[in-house]
Length: 281
Ligand code: PAF
Image (cartoon, rainbow, N blue to C red; front, top):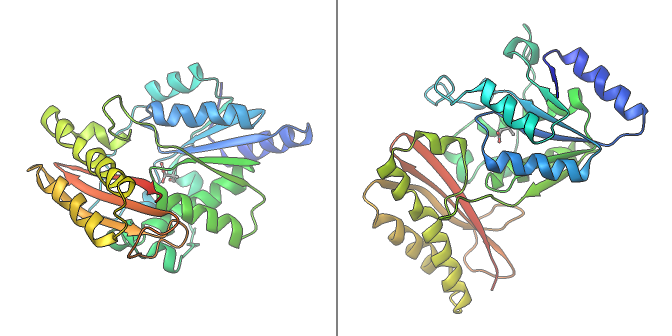
C-alpha cells in the first residue's frame, strides 16, 4: 500500500491510473477505522481496479464546541488495517495541504441540510460537502463509497454530485452492525461498558418501529412516540431527534407511504450516536 500525503502526488497517481484505463474507487474516512469502514474498502475493491482510502479528520465539519481535538486517532492501527484489506493508496494529507492559507470556498446547501443532524450541527454539512468535493477533485475517483448510517450525509453527497456535475458514481453501503445490533461508529469508542449496553436502545427502537409497520401501523406520530418511549426507558440515553421523513427530500412525513426513513440521534455520555432504518409498509 502506498501512502500519499501531498495533493499533487495524489493527482498525478490518479491521472496515471486513469490513463491506463483503471477504475478508481474512493472511500473517504476520518480514520479510527472499524469493520464498517473495512467493508466499504472491500466494496471498493469489487467496484474499482484501484482503491484509495482518504484519512483526514476534517476541521471544517466540527463546530468549535464539538470533538475535533478529541476525535479518536490511531494512524498506525488504521494503516495496518487498510494494508491488510488490500487498499492501494492511503491518502493522508495534513490540514494545510487541504486548506492552504487563503482557502475561502464553502459549499452551502439548501433544504437538505436543514433537518435532522443539520438542525443541531449548523455548518456541519457545508464542511462535509466542501471537503468531499475537494477530495473528489484530488483523487478523481470513478466511484465513491459512503456508509448509509450517515444517511443525511449520503443524500447531501448524492445531491452535490448531481448539482455540480461530478462524473462520479456514489454508492451507499448498508450500515454494518455489531453482533448485538449497535451500528458501528468511531464514536462508539467514547462509550464505557454501561453506556455501550445503553446504546442498544437505538437499534431496539428501530426494530420496534419496523415491527409496528409490519403489523400495519403507518401513522408517523404513533411510530415516533413508540421510538421515543423505547429510548426513554434507558436512563443514560437522551433523544436529540427521532424523525420520520421522506428518504429523498428528508422532509418530515406523517405516514409511512411507499417508504420512509426513520432517523435517530441519541446522546449517551460523551457520545452522540446516530442510526436509521428505511420503513416499508
Ligand atoms: O463520514 C465521514 O467520515 C466524514 O464525514 C467524511 C465523509 C470522510 C468527510 O470528512
